[in-house]
Image 1: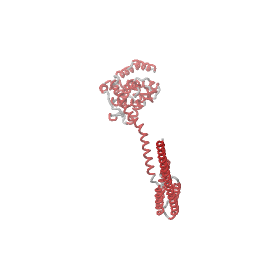
Image 2 (image 1 turned 60 degrees about the horizontal axis):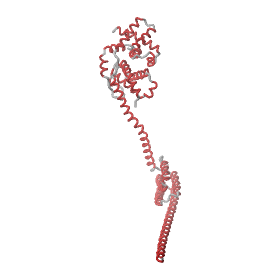
Image 3 (image 1 turned 90 degrees about the horizontal axis):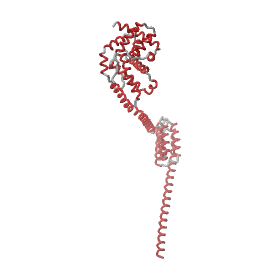
Image 4 (image 1 turned 180 degrees about the horizontal axis):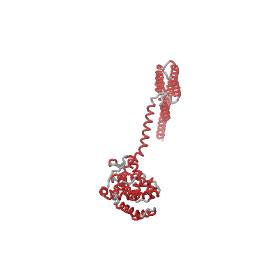
Length: 243
Length: 167
């Protein structure tokens, strides 16, 4: 025991009114306590603990910082995967089903990027009409989808006659499968589709004719240009000969 | 990178904490495990702990750790090496020191005398006379006033005098 510490303790006891005889005995006890040797672990032992702690620190940094970086990336990938799965599954959905709004939203996005996708959308609506017609009890939804189909049909970007004809086939199937109530409505939409097919054919024909005319004009212009060149050459040669 | 101050703290105080645990458990191996655990805890929270560091605060962590340990291992003091704490660091022991502790008669006699004291007096003896902390520091650790610590230390000496006399 430190001498100063022992003195301080004895003083404290004195201040508390402990008798001198008692103080003497207490001092002996304190000496006995102090005689037990100091429990000091070796310096090398302590240093080895600190170095182990250091190693653990390094490991901790590897194991704990890595997830901090990868966890958000993994979560993002997982979310993306779920989103893609949902969008893919939504493509098979029908009006009235929970995933159907996702299907429409994805169609709108693709349509913005690729306007020719409009014809595919028309075909999809016709497929939906066919499937709803088969279910028979969804006359309200069928009506709504027929309206959607008509709106798509009016779109000027619908120029793919093959897709429109496929759509017509789907509608004809729907007419066969549906109950009497909706038959008339489908029939009228089929007629509109046929009109659109004729229109598209005419547009295609017109375009073809236009292209042909442009080509003819171009080739005519080229031949005139070549003849002019030949004429010019001849004149130059004649001039040289005259000289 | 670990703080340089932490290394200094460990070198300066780990023996004291080891001694504290030894007198509380009478098991030099367990005392080493506990000392390691306390310093790992301090190290993990060093940035938070550093500004408020004091010797009394370190003992308080050690004491709280011990109370938790005894609470979890209900059969107090019947500790075994199989129930050592997990510091995440492979345990090692200063076998030379442990050999000396285990063969030292004075330590054994003193431990036998101290273990006869009631728990509150025993804690005061260990902290005040063995660890040589001031009455104020002991008060901080045990949540007592300085006056209370002095009263208890006086009572502890009276009891020790009886015990040591009848040995």
